[in-house]
Length: 178
Image 1 (tube, one colour):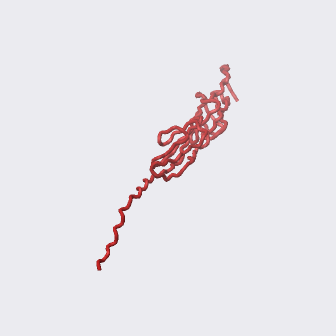
Image 2 (cartoon, helix red, strand yellow):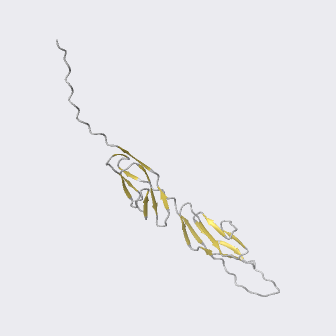
Image 3 (tube, rainbow, N blue to C red):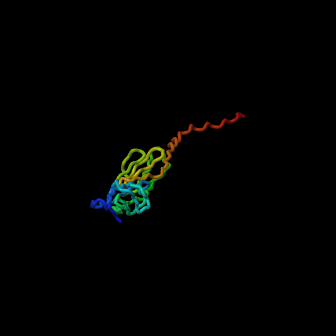
């Protein structure tokens, strides 16, 4: 509990620690959310077991801290809710052959439903027409600005075969004179 020095009477209202950021927080896959408690307390104990003033949270859940003030009062903060987004792994859909002849093209389509798209070619639509050999991938972004990159798709280009040329007429076989 709380205690005071009997030689002096001073009543301080205990102030609960606050968390920064507060409320609901969203982080992308592989990232963390750093949450800090108000400075000035003697000790801190998070519901994670951490005893530092700030924690880096990497799991979805509700978090709070119990902070002990100089008078020995243990005060609980509000709760911060952390949501970690799932990994984004876009698969490219291929319409056509990846083995092109000169002049042909193949359509590469990113999955629909993302906020924005960025192809290795610099294009920003959800689909691209490819006419050259090379490695192609797309990075997609969701409404939280979380991103994911597809695997590379390899396109090869074969030269058009030469047109058959008209063959010279065959020479008449020589005959032996009798």
